[in-house]
Image 1: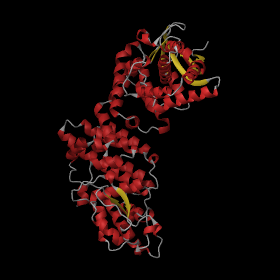
Image 2: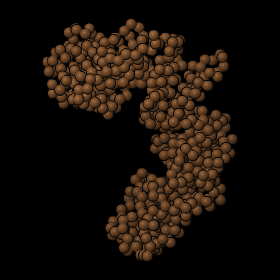
Image 3: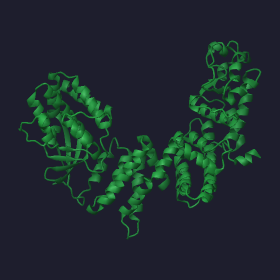
Length: 603
């Protein structure tokens, strides 16, 4: 006899095995409408082709008592299957197909196989399946033929099922239902309840770590929950679950939640390979939990870990880092505390520029956590803000300079160093000792490009990397220069700015650009010196203004952007002009993204 038993059966027969509940730690219903539609269309195609079986994967069940089962893997499919049966039941009710109606209801509700069952009496029947708490009431309304709201993924799934089945005729619906209950099969894995024999979480992990994996976040949560299987761990288990759910809800977006998980654990444990991130996190948690003093259990370490990970101010801090447009009040207070208000470059600039470079998130997060910790103590708060501001200026300068000269910004070149540095910063008692290690780390990473030396950086921008063909990179570069040059108080909407080539890209405009006679204009189009920005209030170049530099110059001169107005100082536009302007822009870029204090630069 094996410990884990398996059995293949039709999906409909599975429901007759008794009562099914989703464990407290499982996520709520999470299928998107494309997942639901894929299943509906696949089954519909199977009905047409009539193969002997449509296999829908494995379902993992843990026996709790006689005819009582927990669904440790497969709740999404079981819920979706039951919703399809519920909608077909409503269809059969409307068509007076009483036998089919009764059969569909007996799958969903705890009724004998041959009992007479009607939708009108469904309020008195006990459902076979109990979804997670947040989905339960809505699910019970659906399967009983009641109307529901339109919010939530369960409702979206129901709407897709309703639309799909509503389009069927009686004959097609009957054929679809017969195939659904007679030929859609699953493989059931039966896990004994006793965790000393086998831990269901280990089986769950093994199933979902082969082939297409669950998200790292799902696997990490499942592993954290495994520390609270004991009967005496109910209270701590509920606290851990509630804290995780609340934190992830505050992050609002699945990608942002995944980014926060990666950011936090890189800060906590140092570099973890992306391809083996979950394994690395699990190993670190296990080593630290088992290394606790004998007076404290491993679960105690996990409780403290989750408490830190889900700390409201830390979650909110990450949201501000990931979405700088939500960080207004926080940025204003930081600028005030760091005394960087007169500087052209503040925390707002740093966060906007670094938003696309998630490899830097652990470093920025670790630095700002120190500031968040000190917000209640005015004296130390200001000191921490000044140190954090200096560190972030140097980090931002390094990242932006590298991005501008590198053919492609490669996070893998820096992730190990940045993550390990973030760990040291987060665990440090003071930022005073961090400025040196940060500069040492940046200098070590700079061996690839040599951009921390101003002369080399300027040379790369004027000669080696004279072109910028990537519109996003070019726009980021020009926005940074313009922000430094803009002194008239005009507020520039960066997102609305558009990239403009002074010498137009289109050949049809080149005839009267006299500065390029005898040359190939294509060699100059993407040069950095030929690029500028246009704001929302600027007129867009038309055929007439694009026909020559003289025609375009008045349009540039009237621009709201200082960078663009400056071009009107040139009397002609030629290759020599582009080279000269590019040298000026490169030198300005070295000042914008500098590695010195603003006070030193002003001196």
